[in-house]
Image (tube, rainbow, N blue to C red):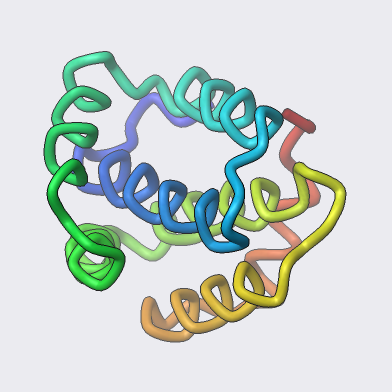
Length: 129
């Protein structure tokens, strides 16, 4: 559990999780349960979750992506790696990784200037959701 995660890393993780959950066109119950566990592991308070919900309410995918990337890119490399390791695990949670999820992950990781292999290695150290 990362109790020192910044507000920006927590919000960025939520924004990108939102996009990843919807990427394949269907939101699976397992994905929402995993998001709840991510919130728990990352100590994301209800106030930040409510801020996130209000912020994404009227935005389209592009606006959510742009805002999420601005938040993530303001973080340390360690925070970025942590966020992307959660996103990687989240992409696997429903038992199938959709091509749109892969594209989103790869594109986002590249734009954050993080190494994909580092994300995979860190994700393997996380417990399952």
